[in-house]
Length: 350
Image (cartoon, rainbow, N blue to C red):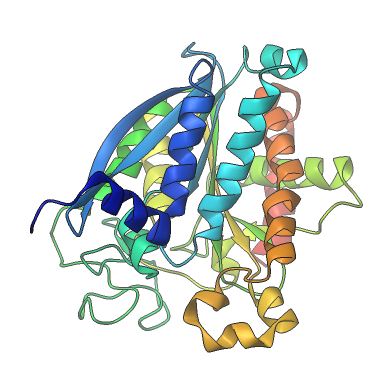
């Protein structure tokens, strides 16, 4: 392919992947507050786009860690945009907010806001190899799972393709797994939020498992966090907090894979992975013309609605940041865990 001028490259990125330029600008603006690393590069039509991992806060291995992830499914770019909005807020507050600075002395934040830039560029769910990254881990659902949508190995021409049996994980999936293993799982307490869109008319916080109808080992902690949120913000946006398997199970879920790895490799630590599933059907119901474009099923199209989505999840992120920092104050103690576990089972699994 002939070499392209910097102006041509910039124009193409601005047209297809403006989130990359926004992220690079944030890295420069917040350079004195942030630490970042390139963990992979994706070649898109001769243009290399880096996948960044950004950190801010304490460097101590003993502090809790919360990770924010987005852009796993390229068509759901609102997840990346929400995280860039949150990162923008944090960077600019750190210029004046003494309370936030003190808070970040006791916690570490990890951002990986654009995991699948090739998919975002082409407005497709999968990566450039046709693989659905959230079906790409080497684990299978326990029992029956819905055909195709749960993940399959038939062909990359069909959605929800997992990749070939026995092949290594895709480079983007592997980069996410390494990031979580190295930067989250070794902390005494860690939590992850992976931002998606496209299910239902109400926003949900899904926890593991996606592959099984049985509760995870830390279901008591999930239930305790749900109670904490509902008591703290009784009149706030009504997120539904529940295991994903309440609705359907899937093969190859990266967060199931990482959760099991955490339990096996770091049994004394707590890792709680969540997926923020933004209810995009509500946007379609309010603007039916979005159905004429596949992109519109997963993203708010009207400007004022998009601005509302970009700001409405920031209080949730603030809560999860504070809950992670103060995890020892609400995590069930040994004498409480059995009762909390039974309450969670009665709520979600009976």
